[in-house]
Image 1: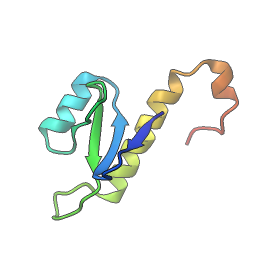
Image 2 (image 1 turned 90 degrees about the vertical axis):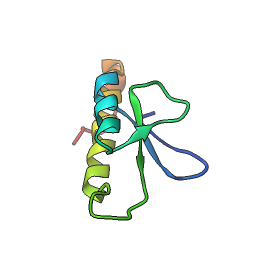
Image 3 (image 1 turned 135 degrees about the vertical axis):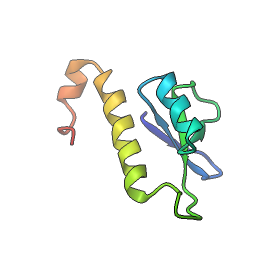
Image 4 (image 1 turned 30 degrees about the vertical axis):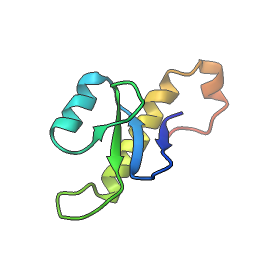
Length: 86
């Protein structure tokens, strides 16, 4: 699993490279702590209210990065069975 949307749908939780990366994103206001997940996960909000909000492109980048992090930790045999990563 590389992304998760909860029942309330306020945002998407994604994996970051490490706890420090997650903390940095939270500190600069690009994400919030992902409820019920390890500290290396953050929640990127869906809500767009102003010019400093998360853009669709930034959300896409976070999803792709999360996918790559999780995919890289899969066994090589499993990775070989997946479509090529972008």
